[in-house]
Amino acid sequence: MTDFFYKLNRKDFLDDQYKDYSDFDNPLPIGYGQTISQPSLVLQMTRELELGKNHRVLEIGTGSGYQTVFLAEFAEAVYTVERIAELSHKAKSRIDKLGYKNVHFKIGDGSHGWNEHAPFDRIIVTAAAGRVPDALIDQLKTGGKMILPVGESNLQELVRITKTNDGKIEKEHLTLVRFVELVGEYGWGKNKY
Ligand code: SAM
Image (cartoon, rainbow, N blue to C red):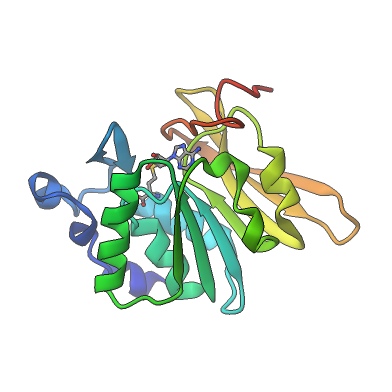
């Protein structure tokens, strides 16, 4: 995965005015008040997902499409949902240009997940929720894992959820992060702990 990390150019996911900053390990604006995460965090989140080549992955928050490409490279299929149409269209054209055929895009409120294609082996949410949306737990396969930032709007814990074979939900706290808010029916502010 590290080889791929060095091969994939973050420049390709940034607007012209930010391309010069692509090598810095920090978040950058992608328009519409949203950000692309720092590369090291994208790498960490992808690793913590423990992807397999046969996995179907749900991603909430397509953003620039940078994280999506990591998922597409190391899993079988990616279902990615973004609420801002312009970002989704831009991400799709970048990902098409790179030649990936295993990414499916949807524009809408990802706090509902994507029921038509559930259940998923892996789920990753790249926007902060006040609590884990129930719809996403329901759409996770038994034995599946989900990574998401959960907490207050200015600081969250990155959490890994595992749905165990006996149907229990296990939660591990990985690190502290700061993501933009998951907007939507089951997003931040509506369902705080
Ligand atoms: N992983 C992305 C990347 O590599 O560029 C960055 C994602 S950005 C931090 C979070 C994204 O989540 C934004 O594009 C935002 O519009 C999106 N978002 C927020 N709430 C959402 C929702 N309810 N459904 C779908 N997307 C949502």
